[in-house]
Image 1 (cartoon, rainbow over the protein chains, first blue to last red):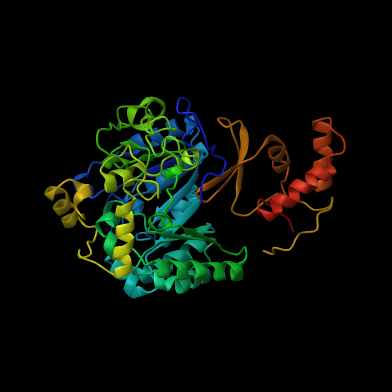
Image 2: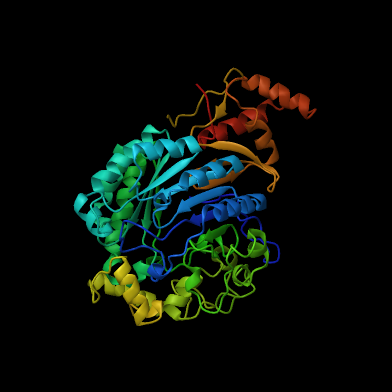
Length: 388
Length: 95
C-alpha cells in the first residue's frame, strides 16, 4: 500500500509535502519479535516526547500537508495519551492508522479510540499457529490477537493484517491467508522480511529458500483468484532474491517523515544508524524547518548524490538508488548503490546470504528483541557488524 | 461486493465507497481519497464528480449540476465513464 499520487521525480530543491507522518510513540513493547526494525540500542533510548510535543508535531506536519498518520512503536497502546493524540489527529483532518500488536487493545480501549476518531487499525500477526506466533514474538499472544481482530471488526474499522514472512512461517502462508479471510480482514500484507536492525542480526535464521518463496507466491496467487475483491492480498517482494533495488519509503525525504519516540525526525525507520548525518529533534526545531532545510533530509534527496553505477543507470529515477541503510549495512558505505541491485559491486555479499539460506547455514542462534539483548548488542560493537 | 460490471444509468445514487474518505487538501490543491495507509489524488474533474456523490442525488442530477456549474453541455458520457472506473476501484458504490 502506498501513496499512489506521489510524484516520481520531485526535484531535490523543492520537496513536496511530507504526506505520510509516522509517529513512533514509544520503543516499549510487550513483544520481542526477532525481525523488529526498531534500533538495536532501543533499550538505551528511554526518552519519549510528551503529549504536548506530539500534538504540536501533528499540527505542524498537517499544516505542511501531512495527511496519513501512522501511530506506531514499539507498542503505541502503551502510551496512555493515545486517545488524546488520536482526537487531535481527527480534529486536524488526518487519516489515522494504529499499527499495533493488539496487546492492550481491550474492548473498552477500542471503544475510546473509536470515539476519538481513529480511522483504521493494522494488526500484526506472527503466524497462523499458536506455537510459531508465540515463539516468534516470545510471548503468549495468539488467542489474544484473535480476540482483538474480532473487536476491531466490531468497531467497524477496516482491518489490515500484517504478517512478516520469513523462513520460519513462510510454509504456513496458506493457513495465514485462510485465517485472515476468516477473521474478516480487508487487506492482508504478507511482508517478506527486510533485513535491518533485529532482522539483520537474525538474517541467516530468517531468510527463506527460493523454493519456499516461489511456493508462497503461487499459493498467494491462488487465493487472490479465489477471494476476488473481498480481501486484498499484498505480497511484498523480497529484494535480496530479486536482484533489484526498491525505492526506499517512496524516496528519501519524498513523502515520509518518521518521528522517533524521543522526537528525532528521520526519513525512514532506520536512518538513524547512518554515520555522519545529523537528524534534528522536533523538540528544538519545527517540522517545516526539518523537512525543508535539514542536512539529514536533504542528503539523499533526488539523484544528485549518486555515484556509479547509479549515476548513469536508466533505473535511477525509478529506484532512487535503493536503500541507504542497506548500503551501509552490507557495503559499510551509505553513498553506494543498494547491494541488492545486481549492478552493485557489493552484490556478491547478497548472493552469498541467499546461498547460505539455500544451504540452510545458520551459525548464529536466534536473538529476541528484548532489553538484555539490546544492551548486550550495543555494548559489544557498532550495531551493523553484529551479525557479520 | 460483486466484481460484475454495474448497470450505470441516470437513476443510480452513487456515494463514496465504504472504507474511503473524500476530502479536500489545500496543500495539494485537490480532492483526495484516503484509505488505510494510502491516498489517491484526484484530478479536478474527478474531484468535482466525487464530491457530488452523496448517496442522495441521482447521477442524472449530478451530470446536470456539473453541466450548469461549468457551462459545459453534453457531459453524460464522460461522467458515466468515470463513474464506471470509480466503481471498479471501489471509490464509488450504490444500492
